[in-house]
Amino acid sequence: MPATAFPSPKGSNAPEQVHITQGDRGGRGVIISWMTPNERHPNVVRYWKAYDPSDVYTAHSQIFTYRYYNYSSGYIHHATIKKLEYNTKYFYELGRGDAIRQFSFTTPPRPGPDVPYTFGIIGDLGQTYASNSTLGHYMANPKGEAVLFVGDLSYADNYPLHDQSKWDIWGRFVEKSTAYQPWIWTAGNHELDFAPEIGEYLPFKPFLHRYHVPYKQSGSTSPLWYSIKRGPAYIIVLSSYSAFTKYSPQYQWFEAELKKVDRHETPWLILMMHAPLYNSNNYHYMEGESMRVIFEPWIVQYKVDLVLAGHVHAYERSERISNIRYNITNGLSTPIKDKSAPVYLTIGDGGNIEGLANNFTNPQPFYSAYREASFGHAILEIKNRTHAYYTWHRNQDDEAVASDSTWFFNRFWYPKDESN
Image (cartoon, rainbow, N blue to C red; front, side):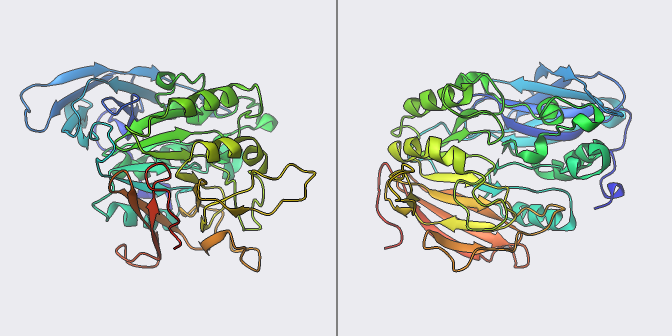
């Protein structure tokens, strides 16, 4: 889409590219982020409960800037507000004078086993007309309360010299959703922005400046892997493009993190990463194999419910399968059905500039339950500790139409075979 489709908001030094994410472990905090193009200040968020507009609180942002080749960013603000009430609508306000902008969000319910909660799932979005269709379809569903985003945001690195203005355009494009409900961020390969040919040697520089997450609260040493609890779900975000082998920081953190999960409090255990561990598309085939070999035994041991990924620009849902018996010498290299294993969802179909990955392997392997090379998004409606209803919606249909739908049964509380 052209840059003119997403101009900066009116007003002097108007805050733009507003986005929010969870700001703590349990859902009582929110990180509010925005950019001011010309001046550092104001750096204040004013916020209040919807039912009590007279009681206004304030929080100050930390301010960051970065340079990337021939680009200098505006002033990037990140303000964390804490000790919010659960399940409460808040309004918040940014800017001053003729540039005041007002938004709202609703906090999640207190983490618990039977509180219903609905997530949207989007990946590999980009900023094409198909991207706009995907976002519009998701926003047309009033059920979505937060987005689980599995990586590849702006695709700025697909443009000459990693055109950083594409990050700004993307931030303005998605603001109509990201300013009102939290997006839980995962870093993809298009967030690397590693370009030594133009003197850019620091991976993830634009992404890490623009998108902050509450990684320290989960004991992580990097914002590229972290965890949160939101309603009935315990969500762990991993980095496909950081070291994950034995003794690496991510490996050690993930091993310790799985032991913390209390399925009596948060029964639904969900992993997010960018490169899929299972994939029957010739695009990016087996790129997640190294991570699968290392982490799959833990994934099965701890009975992870769902593993979400993107990267492959198509949609695929797996059966509950594992390949943990394979040890390179025994020849048992074919996955088998495993009721302790998760369902793997590949949702890299947001609408990116690179197009669809329409080269599936044939015949369709038994472990692939549904696959299709169409752009779209998914909705995960967690009903209680045992059941969740899942739908995938392709862009060319009305939002109400589910092209793929199924019930997921919780691996801890109700480990039945859904296919029966």
